[in-house]
Each structure stands twice: as structure tokens, then as C-alpha cells.
Image (cartoon, rainbow, N blue to C red):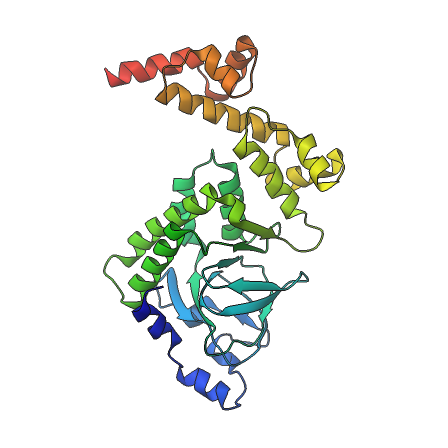
Length: 324
């Protein structure tokens, strides 16, 4: 991270100095009422959708929730998080932690060299990222939707991104713009967030997903990755065998988490991929059908027309006429 930014974030605040001197955490800085739900209204100015603040060090931050999406970026050192009833999460320098609105967590004491920045994000800030990721990216739609809507399937995502330079650059750009109150910050950062999500999805092996015990979100994520990585030959049986669970159990988890069966999700991905190939290549329709997993062209024609209202040939002819 840029030295100037790191020095700014490393500065010991007056709140941190009091904590260092032994005073208790002042919860009124973060929340109102008896519970410890951190309130976005305490941290965001009116009209803001996103802001940042350095993580508060020199205290074991007690268990809390928040009414916004929280993203922590570890600038230097490390922090340890106790999220829900799961195992401790050790966030290292260069890594990201996404927490949805329903997540409950505590954070062990951080020292002077453990520098992190928290993004406080209202759900509507992700609307543009949703548009960019698109409905055809099942993995992105599922992850973004769960974060944005506070779904119970995923409480948090850990992104092991220390070696991903594009991610580091995008996060640093967002931090810099928010620290300096750069003009046009909201629009620029919504674009940066969308690009960040695309970079993470392009390297989805770096994403470690966790849910509350019993939710099965890692299994759902594995099934969606199976579709994204190889829609032609994707098989739910392979996922079930790999995780040593029964096929009916895994099928039920996917239906509960996404509202669709594995077969429906796979067909949606195949048709979206076929439509992309129709737009961007001159491959014959038969070759496109085979490349996405349909060996019978007539069957492909039938499900394509049912989904889009026209045949693949009609779609391509329409594109040609539009170009002319």
C-alpha cells in the first residue's frame, strides 16, 4: 500500500489513545439503545452510501452486528475475527473480509502495527455492481445478492487477495478517493467496486465462503463454481462425491439457497453462453450447441426458443440486420 495512505491510517486517534490508556470502549460512538448493532447513521453523513474508517485498535472489540455491509481490508499486520459460531478467521495483510448485514462477530485486540480500514457500505451502493456482473454470472449474482440483501446463506467472504495486484490497486484507489473526498467519488467508487467484484470472480479460487453452521454455503458455492468453470460437462454428482454428501441433500441445499435446481441453473448458464457465442463468433449453430453441452441440435433449438422467444438462427439474423 502507498506509504502516505498507510501512514494516515496508522495514526493513533484520540479514541484509540484513550483505549490504550485503559479506558473502556465507548459504545455510544457506534450504536444507540441497549443492543450492540453498529448503526450506519452514526458513521455515514446524510446522503452517503459509502465511507471508510480505520479499524479501532487497542481493544478487544465486543460481539456486534451492523445494519450495513462491512468490508475490511487489512493494510498491515493481521486481525482475528470470531464470526457467528464458526472457526476464527485470521485476516492477513492484503486480504479482504466481506460481512453481510446479518453477520455477528467479535474482533480480538489489534496492536499498533495491525492496520485495517473498514468500508461502511449501504446495500444500494452495490446496485451498479449487480448490473455489471449481470444475471448470467451465477456465482457473482449469488454472492452479491446474499451480501446486498443480508441473506443467511453466507455470513461472510474471506478473499485471499494479497497477490492479486488489480485488486490491491482498486482497493487502494477507493481508500485514497474517500480519504481525500475526491469529486465524483460515489460514481467512481461504484465503478471500482464493480470492477473489484469482476476481478474477484475471475479469481474465484481466492474466495473462501462461510455461512452459519448448517447452512451449507460452501457446498452451494462449489456447485455454482462447477457450472461457471465448465458448463458443458458440469455434474452435480461430481460435487456431491467430492464433498462426501448425498445428491438429494446437495440438490435441496441449492434449491433452498438459489430458488432454482442445479439443472435449471446449468441450463440458464448454457443458454447465456450460447447467446454470447451467437453474438461474437461465426460458429455454426450446431457447433455452438455442442460446445455448451447439447449434442442434439433440435433439442437446443427447442429450449432456446422457449427461453428467448426466437430461434438461435433468428437471433443471429436479427443481429446481422441490426448491424447493417
